[in-house]
Amino acid sequence: MSNKSYINRPNRPLQIYAILFLVFLYAPVMFLPLFSFNDSIYVRFPLNEFTFKWYGELFHREPVWNALMNSVKVGVATAICATGLGVFAAKAITRYRMPGKAPMVGFVMLPLVVPVIIFGVALLVLLSQLGIPLSLYTVTIGHMIICLPFSIATLLPRFEGFDGSIEEASADLGENAWWTFWRVTFPMVFPGILASLLLTFTISFDEFIMAFFLTGTEPTLPMYIWGQLRFPQEFPSILALASMIIAASFVIVFLGQWVNRDAAFAAAKKGD
Amino acid sequence: MSDTPASLPDAVERPEPKPASRGGFSGLLQRSEVARGYTLISPTLLFLTIGIVIPFIILITMSLWTAQGFGFDTTPTFKNYEAVYNQPLYGALLGRSLWISSLATIATVVLSYPMAYYVAFHVHRNKMMWIVLMTLPFWTSYLLRVFAWKVVLGYEGVINSALMSMDLIEQPLEFLLYSPNAVIITLAHAWAAFAILPLYVSLEKIDRSLLEAATDLGDGPVARFFRVTFPLSLPGVIAASLLIFIPTTGDYITPALLGGPDGMMIGNLIQLQFGPVNNWPMGATLAIVLMLCIAAIAAIFMITTKIVKDRIL
Image (tube, rainbow over all chains, first blue to last red; front, top):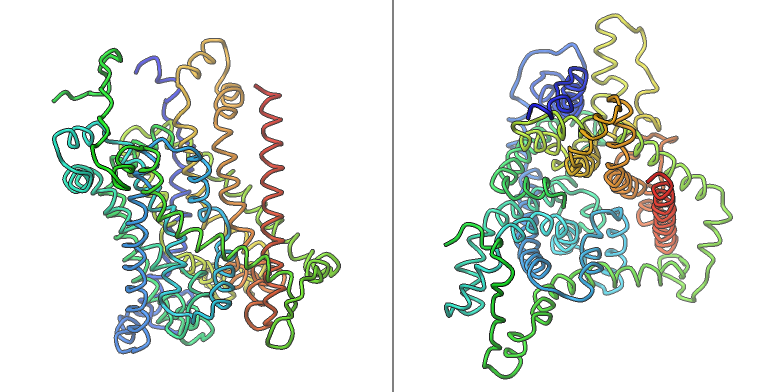
């Protein structure tokens, strides 16, 4: 430690920079809850009195509840399907030597980098040519494409993190592949699965661009918010709604990161 | 059971698992590792083929059609591509998208680098906590984060009203909202996590003894950084740049909410073609042109960095 210290010795300016950076990262988002408790339809300083009325008003809005239910349905379906596919894909990538593995992984990770709008319009064109009407199902398909890379990236370190010989031992002791999976693999990767479910749910719940192109008559929550942004008098209610969504997202993602922290950290250290 | 089964000497090789004595398809799957791997990954590949490859083929096909009233003229033609090439509007919007994305990318990488450096080299406890803290906002709704910037930068928004109530300015500052600057600030903020993670990973991987060696051989902190740390973190810089540049070129929420007329990007135009303008073939063409531009720029970027790297190292 002692001969390393001159490289790692505390760097005051850098520390201050790091704190400013975090403030810059969180400050804009924190203004939403601040103004959602402000008793004025204008979003500006100076603040008026404290109020809960914008939150109270949301509870009596039918469309908000409908949009919320739509988003939850899509989010749950997306999380389960994407994680299900992700588990198989992650197991295949880590456990088996396959020719052409690198291009396949690249293909699966493609949605992480290609602009979502391109996938959105491509799917829209396909669906319209097939004559499939837009609905919550089409939104779910779109969200699954976006969520798959995140699911696999969350699960890969889990599969890499435990020794494959445990599975072989189970097989040698007479379990078939199915029971080996349920009694050995599944418990070992369970934190990863939980993290993947939570993260993909949040991504789907918050996703807007795919939903914009693929939503039919039933809007998801972000679509509802987008529609309301045109009306300045709706601003405070949207602030209240946005604050709740952001708070919920923070909690869910934090839980997801937390249950999977050891694997995620190990991967970051190893440099994957 | 041993704690470190992986560290057994290589001489004690595990016997190959005996081929299962089952026939038929199931037996084949048991025997062939390759086949089992493919079987497991095939649902994902099938889904992505239906979700990505087929839509793309149809998108390319549609870009060769022309809009006719509410339907399409399906005779293949390059008219749309010619229009993109000839009409200055398309080229200008494409150029502006790439320009705004490049500036946002540079801003994000430059601002995130010290942060990633700090966590990699100067945080010793609770590193995980820092990483979660830095990436947490990224997971929350993109739409809402952009909306938050609208609240901050707006004509009567946080900055303007705060400055006015402190009597620092008389009139609201107009350049904040509805300008390319607003788009760049928002993009840099929204994509910070995409920069921090690859940068952090590449910095964390650097062998600390190289830094000690540089110091022992007489390099000061600045020389050490530019001769050892920075070149070794280049892969992270490249990954971060591409991870931000490529998705942001197609962004359309940020320009739609914050860009104003001068901040419109190609994504908005694509959305218009599929929405109010109702010229789907043109929209398909623009999407494909955007893809080609991104691919070309990414390729040039990677080749250039490779050449530069070979020169340096």
